[in-house]
Each structure stands twice: as structure tokens, then as C-alpha cells.
Image (tube, rainbow, N blue to C red; front, side, top):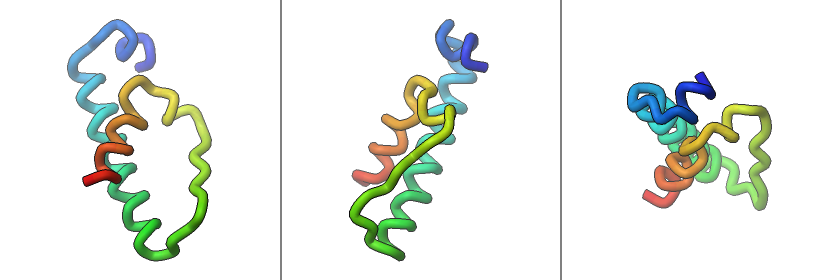
Length: 61
């Protein structure tokens, strides 16, 4: 998947951005429920190109 993403596959790019957007919505709910000072995101998924950018954009909405 990462290879296809780096190659610019439009379907994989759209999928990663959509997943990032939903992750951003989940983070928004977390912020509203618990109001944490810091959120630490781990794992390999946030390293996918466009994922965290989409999550941040959803948070800012």
C-alpha cells in the first residue's frame, strides 16, 4: 500500500486521506470529551503521506 501511495495511486491516496479525516473526527471527539493537554499519536499509519494532514484539517474544521 505504501508503495502505491508513494507512486501516486489516486485510489490509495483518496483512501489514506479519508482515513486521516475520520481519525481527525475521532480526535475531535477525544478533545471534546477529555480536553487533554497533549495527544500522542503512535504507530506506522500516521507516517502515510497525507494522513496526518487530513486529520489536522478535520480537527481545524
